Each structure stands twice: as C-alpha cells, then as structure tokens.
Image (tube, rainbow, N blue to C red; front, side, top):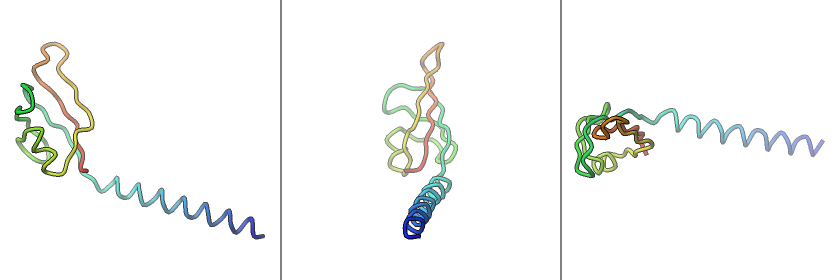
Length: 84
C-alpha cells in the first residue's frame, strides 16, 4: 500500500510540474521579424515590437530562436523571436 501511495505522489508531482511549464510557455508571445540584413545595426520589422535592431529585440525582453537568410541573395533575413 505504501509503495502505491508513493508512486501516486510521484506521478502527481510530475504532472503538476509538466502542467506548470506548459502554462508558462503558452503565455509567452513570439513572432517573426523580416528585413535587410547588414550586420548588427540592421533594422528589422517585427510583428509584436515594430522596427528594431537585434540589440533592441533583447532589450525589449525577446530573444532570437531562429534565423533564416534569403537563399538567393542573402540580403534579407527572417528571425523568429519569443519572449524570454
């Protein structure tokens, strides 16, 4: 009986931790930024935060999670951002 109670407690604790992390992730915002890329001073247009440089993305509480450049010209970049 003690083993079953112990196992039930562990399962309940793991379920609570999983649910809490899923809720935290669901409340975060994210989006896409697009623009010409000329280094760190490039100004990109982002869905949630407007026109910003890469430094300003971080200052506004977001982070870059993916970067994709234009295969043909490599002059435009697309960034995927999310709240930190």
